[in-house]
Image (cartoon, rainbow, N blue to C red; front, side):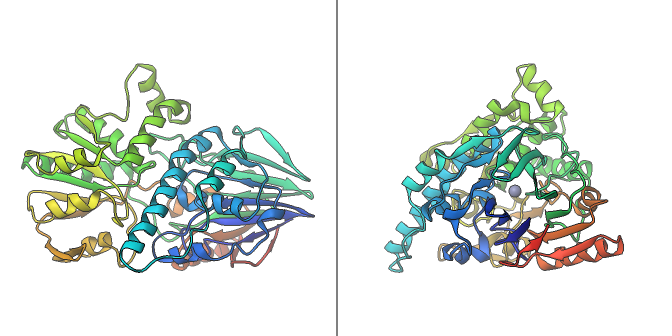
Length: 447
Ligand code: ZN
């Protein structure tokens, strides 16, 4: 058996790999490049999509599923295997990807710099849906001479890592590994000893702050801003980070650590995902399941307002008094968060809280770097509001958790990490007599 990485080599987006045994090829994730690497989405996959027997999907984040419709457009017609929860969450995520792709092209055309034709269309997405096959955790499925099994990765509801067996060999592919002890999701499973582990290395060079410290920091800040009458503005990713924030805001309100002021959930995609969460209750940790059992919605702060329509979103900005606004996009690359920033960057009582990764050159990174003016849509805005970064809500395993998960594995191929992160973990693995391999796009690795 071989596995060839075709994406996410030295980056954290664009995950796509191909495992082969004889003439059976299994695609492991097929994700979009995001941020600074976006242009790579227009390039060919580097393998024959039509010849692959199946695709296995680890979780519903776009950087792991966003190019699946393109795979279909390129002739792929095999089953797409994932847990039932992942398949459910993929629906709104891919619908939104189509919407964003269409909107980008419309805007580019209007601005006189038309983009090339999209690499996939709505009917490719329809055909992709027909290929979905649910595969429960711990049940086995044969693909040609290979057997696939999914185990819990603790990163999203339904997230999995993949165990692939054939030729008397075992390959483990991590997908994204969750951050342990985060309450909302169950802790990830450990992997069986394998001939090769192909793993993410996002935080290979650093650990996260402990959760309790993160919550203390968040509570102090939010309490302070709301009591002074300001707005708390949080750019947030629609799947996982948003629901995590809603969960902790509710918990902190109940503990009396922050006042129960209005909370606006202002992202149609995040609203849809939050709605789906109620039907995925089996996927969560014990604490969340218990709350659901008691008829309590764990993701609903006391005064939550859902703003589906643009007009309602705009109205939030003319509303006096303290409030928390959670809006997309998480990377501040467009979406409703832009209006909220324009209205509140100049308000010294308000605070922008950054809770997720911000790419180089983006507005989020400029805010984090402490710039005094920010240019949005051709106009400069003074930054009088406070800007705070709270990193501990990460949905990824930190360095020590990664090393713990990998312990005892003799050979580890590293993908899905910037080169500093995977270089750092590679050095540590060498010290532990585990063989690190840096994944290179298009280069097969023996299992
Ligand atoms: Zn992910």
